Length: 340
Image (cartoon, rainbow, N blue to C red; front, side):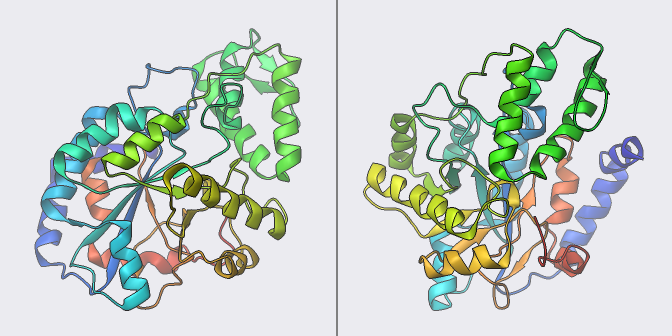
């Protein structure tokens, strides 16, 4: 089925169909599409990092940005704040571009393209990671461990899993990643550390931009936003801990930059209503989930905004499909309630 969908979305006929729909699909007032990326890099450039975070190759990203610049109205997060605060209208086909996790390849591959095209972007930073070489994201550590293990099979809480070749390792990684995400945050981190230690796996290099690099990006026009300090799923910790993580990240950014906007992205999209209300009490005005869809800002809760996650297998035609104004009609198939 995946192979069939990939063939369809890359076909000339599908691209022609989307072009025809784009011509007749009217823009909706105050409708906002939010694209979210994680990494833009070549697949073999950093083989120790999880391929699940790879959003696009540099070539594919450049094509995507060229389309967005040509056919959409790319807005800044200040524009969205002005809409939420004062009702300032957004232009038709408004798109906000965001990056999560502040991987180093953002500065290497993504920002040069966006800067050349004059496109604003918001980079959400887990602020406990810059300038700490001993730290790395748990999913990268887990993937690297599976790649380094010299065995055909491993014992796990899910039972024996094959790791003899790359397809098997990727399948094992996907299953273990979902298992880890289901655990309370402290248990999740402890399990990954124990797993790596048991197999003698050294930590991966910290892939997050340094504070010097982040401040330089801010001077060049990149908006930095809070993404917690240590990147827990905030629905896997207490509400009090979640609020401390969010406000602490915002405070870290304010210390480094002189000020920080009241914006936030939920790590891995995890959230619940108690956390949302906590963020509201702490003065946050925009927060972004990973629930797929477009936003009608006349009705949406600004602390539960939807985004369109861009994956490396997505064709440009598929991305265009998800940005169609009428795509908002499909929001009902992925409700916000209970999302994580």
